[in-house]
Amino acid sequence: MIVEVENKTFIANLSGQIVTNKVHIAGNFNGWDPSDKSLANAGNGLYMATIPLVKGDTIAYKFINGDSWTDPHDSVSCSLLSIQSMGNRYAVLESNIDTIGPVMLSSCSNSPVMELIQADTASACFGDSLSYVLSNDLDSVFWYTSSGVTSQISTPTYKFTVPAGYSGALGVHGYYPHGVRLVDTIWVNQDAAIDTSIIVTGATEFCAGDSVSLSVNSSYQVLWNNQQATSSVTVGQSSSLYATLTSLLGCSAFTDTIDIVANANPDATLTVSLDTICSGDTSFISAAPGYTYDWSNQASGSQISVTSSALIFVIVTDSVTNCYTQSDLVSVTAYPSPPEPQFTGDTTTMVGNKNGYLISNVDSTVSYSWVLDALGTIYTSNPDSSLIKIEWTNAGTANLKAVSKNAFCASSVLKEIQINPLGMEELASSFSIYPNPSTGMISIEMTANHRADEWVMLYDNYGALLKEIQIDSPISPLFDLEFLPSGMYHLVFNDGSTLPFVIAK
Image (cartoon, rainbow, N blue to C red; front, side, top):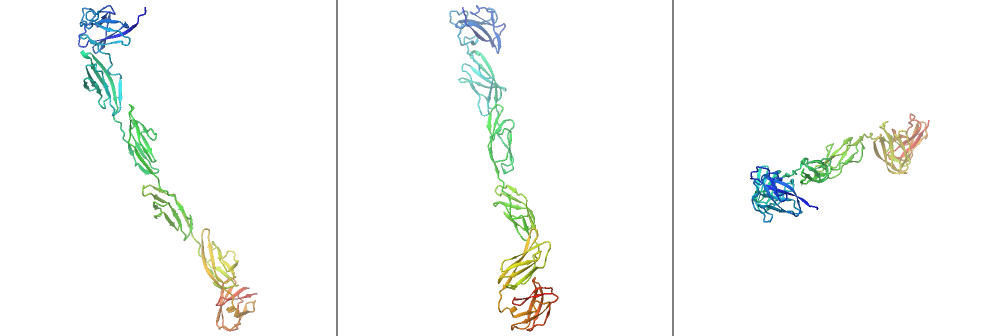
């Protein structure tokens, strides 16, 4: 035969009674032997024993404060069953119950088996609420904190809310009717308020290249919304930052959002019109418009002029944001110009004449050149170009420019040359020279009626004035020009007409 056995636990509450011997349980499961089954002391006045029984049976039992029927034992009549004897208690064994609830020796009530608090620990974040509701089968409930009794809760709900911010051991005593007591303890961890303050080091609005530091309490786990996970971050660009702070209990809170503005620095690029200039010239240095400017030469404005050698920079400031940028250093070099060339030669001449023009202040470190715009042709010049000869081909006004130039700069002088046309009334046509060519002795004969006392200028073929000659009679005496070398010479009259002759030795 197969016997199905179930273990049953019996609990007796003997608090308030004098226990002189071991507590036993006797019943129909052990032949009512008062010394057969002792109960173990479970503390707090509770005694318990576990007995193997057959499922579905109904058992009768008594608790004995000793191991003999002469010792104190149940004296109440708690059962109406036929098997009751001497006030037996009884229990029907079921398949899903393995514990008989606590009982009092002076009471027939079996209290339900319960655990007051299921968990051993409880956690709560700041602002949350921890509450416990106990069974209304209990007669009374007392809650204890580390400082003593916190609250006595009455029916019907037995709801208890843990004081805000309390952490530590929390005990509860629940009493069944007739004084059976249940004791339980839970350790409560309630988080304090999370410190969400942010320490800002530096201004939150700054110029490009600067930064600001944000710091939070380092005792938390930190995650900024830019994915940085350090308690302190340094930010150098525009952004909006906040942090999520998580405590050791897993509670989280958000900091305020800090708006950061990084202003752009102004453009300080410089544009230089000329990096090399000559004396008297000007170079212009320009910066981007729309700002304020502090130039190294004490100037202001977006553009300055430079007329001498200089190293220049500028500090450009945005007056709205006060951000500034210093430009690179730019160099302007000014070179000295050569002296202006001074040249001599006729400024009035005649078509067909050949005139020479000579620079008088020749400098060997300077090169010379000439520019003739019209009416004649430069047909010869000496090697350094300090002397040129021009044959005039047309009447009018010509511009003759002499240019002196060193390695970097140039100077020039411009003269107007008046070229007169040939005409029958010209003075030169009224005179003749003989012999022509001569060896140096010449006569000048007047061939038409003119007033006496006519003065003429004697020039060599290079345009150099040699002497003045007075003609005071129709046939002038011989003029001694033997001191002159062989070559072409010109008599130039007051009207600009020219009478050429040759000396040949």
